[in-house]
Length: 238
Image 1: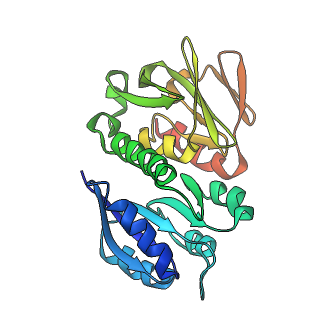
Image 2: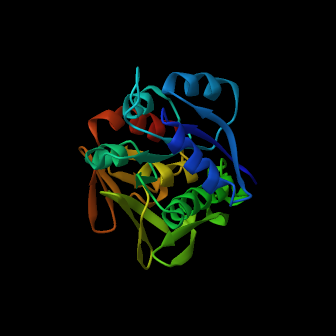
């Protein structure tokens, strides 16, 4: 599968560097080079794009403000000369943050991370819609230099921890460098609701609900205010 990319940067030299690096990777397809974020918005409305190489400091609309305007954006790799925006970038679920000037090996590492996320998201076993079949389904979770096959029936809950997530299963805990949003996209929403900004739970593993908490094993997990109505609706529906 080719990864369809947009380069969004007002510096022609920066565009050429990314384009030249991409030529070394046959699976990267540069669909368009945009000089500002407004051009990119039009293309996103017209074409399927998998990955953005996004500068921050641009005229008219900054890269960060641009990201805030997009609902369900593609994967994003920030390319910038400004380190102070790194935390804000990760809060917006960017997958990597490249400081200009960056070498090809650093570019490759970021693209490989994007490729792995797209591969997992696009895998047939990750598309689970029938909750009764969840026990027969699985996902792959990368942790350090290892990749674990995790059966959905074994997951208890998932906790966000900064730039990482912790996946708690029947017999182990796996730490993975990715956002909770990325994990959420791999799971069937009816079986694995997000009940807090930091928690996704396996609905079938709830032992008790008390006030604004659910109990799974020996852990009391809070139900966030912004998630409570949807969680209660889901329970009544089930």
